[in-house]
Structures are given as structure tokens and as C-alpha cells.
Image (cartoon, rainbow, N blue to C red; front, side, top):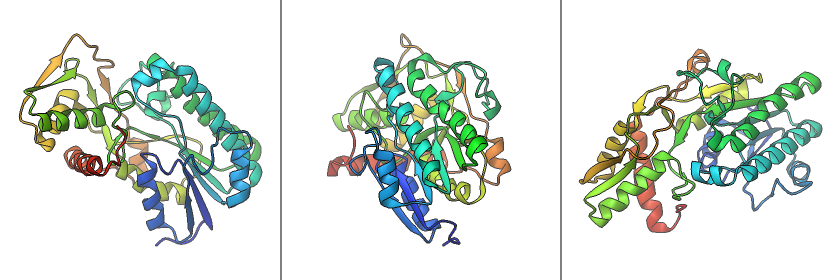
Length: 317
């Protein structure tokens, strides 16, 4: 147990993907009251709900993870919903937190908020060099505005807030719904279902040439206690592995860990998207932090969890 820098930490969005990892990490690190909330507790889009939450629970630290998030298809179909709901919620939470007197607020944005033409490895200094990829711009820009609000509230009110930038997250509790999932949960589900059905092949989009780096959600969660205790800046920090892997290698690894024995067919008629997108983790490493779970180990945990949760009916499909 750490010392007690806070009396009561409230976590919004704790029932979501990353929240399932962050809550136990904070419970292990801090000897204080930790309250985990989901949308059923407080709908932060409702007028007055952020202030009511603070008045009811009286936290001195707020970890804000509540968000409207989803896969690229849903983002492309509903950009206005993603923009409005994230912008409205985050703006209200920031405003009410500093007015209430919260000692520290920590929140997250996505690596998709970087410019679509950012050069890999993508450092934090590239954040404002251009517009994000258009397919998820509603979500990405709304989340990016938190950086401005964090800076503005620090400048005017001395409010201590931190905005972190996780890379391409994956792990247990992810969303495996076809329209809302990202590449890893979609592939894990596809290969496991193909294995169970005895399918001769699994189709994957594109050529498999693009490269990405992925970060296990448990590794990201493990850094959060350090940031709460030690990082007092509105400068963003990338939290990722910084390890490059091609989508083809990713598919082969998922095929292996799921036990699928058929072949992979690449649908080259589908677009590849950005060819190389890797996050620069120099700033993270300079703070003495890193995300070291190997991709294979993380994928094995993800696949095992999916199969177990599917049997119990506890997975988002």
C-alpha cells in the first residue's frame, strides 16, 4: 500500500473496458476509499449530474473515464453523437471538478486524436500539427479539447489535471461487438468462432502490411497510481508499448493463441489505412515507466478471457 495522498478517489466509467483494469490497480496502490461508478449511477450527460455526483460523493481525486467510444464503423456513421456527447460530458466534468475543489483530475484521450499524417514514432509534440483521421474525427477532436481545458483551468484556476494518451489498447473486458470493436477484439472473436465452426479460412481486411503498436490495458492501468501521485502537468503523455508489429504478424499470432488451424485470406480490395502508426514513448520512459507485457502474452490473456466470458454471457457481442 502507498501513502495516502487522497482521502476518496471517484472513478467514472469504471464499468468500461479500461475501467475494469484501473479500479483494481488503484485499490492495490492506495489506502483510501475508492468509488467506482458506471452510467447507471450517474448519467453525466444529464444536466446537473456532474455536480450532483461531486456533492454526493465528495472526492478529492477524480479519475474520469466515462466516454462515448466505439469502433471505426460506428464513429463514421455517427460523428455528431460522438462529438457532442464527449465534448458536453468532459467540459461539464472539468468545470464542476475545479469549482467543487477536487484536488486532482486525471483523464484520457485516444491516440486517434493525433493528426492523420503524423510521422511515426508519434511524439506528443505532434498533437497540434494537423486534423485527425476523418473517420473518427468527431470523437477524436472532442477528446483532444480536454488538453485545452486542462491547460486553461490550470492557468486561470490553478486546477491540477492530467490528460494521458493510451495507444491501441487491448485486453480483457474489451468490446467484441462487430460494429464497435477495434482490430484485436474483432480478430480474436473471428478466429475463435472460425475455430469452433471448423471454418477453412478466416478473411482479414487489407494486405496485412500496415504496422501498429499495441498496449495491454493492464500495463496502462498500472501506471495510473504513479501519475496520480507524481505528475502535475497538463502536458500529455503517450502510454504504449512503442513496439512495432504488422497486422499480418498480429493475425498470425492471434491465430496461434486461439488454436485456429485454417488459413488466413487477405482481402486486398479493402483499404489498409495508415501504413505506419507507432507511438513515441520517450516521455513515458523518461518518467521511469514502461508497458512491458509482450503482445503474445497479452493476446493469450485476452483470448482466454473472451472464451470464459462468452460461456458466462459476460462479454459485449
